[in-house]
Amino acid sequence: MAIRLGRPFDTKAPRNRFAASSHGVLGHDGRTPDEIRALGRSDLAAYPTVQIAEARVTGIAADGNGLAVQADGLEDVQARRVILAYGLKDELP
Image (cartoon, rainbow, N blue to C red; front, side):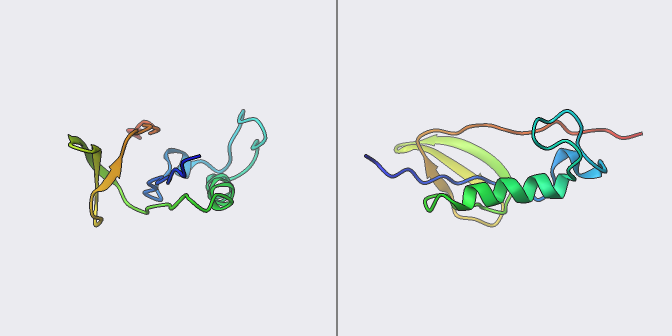
């Protein structure tokens, strides 16, 4: 079985950061955005092959080995697959 290295990127700016608490999120109703983020990071910590990169992804390009993920302040991260999971940008009045 191949070991797969997970590299989630986190900008520390979740979309819901302005909300006092969540509503309608199964298992997290009433939790603050920071609590939900901390629980997610704690869940990921159980996997020794996951390393969270606290950086913003700025680009993804094909290269000879698959994909090269560019992020602020980091060397390119090589990947065979990329899962895009990003929120919307709210334009607040």
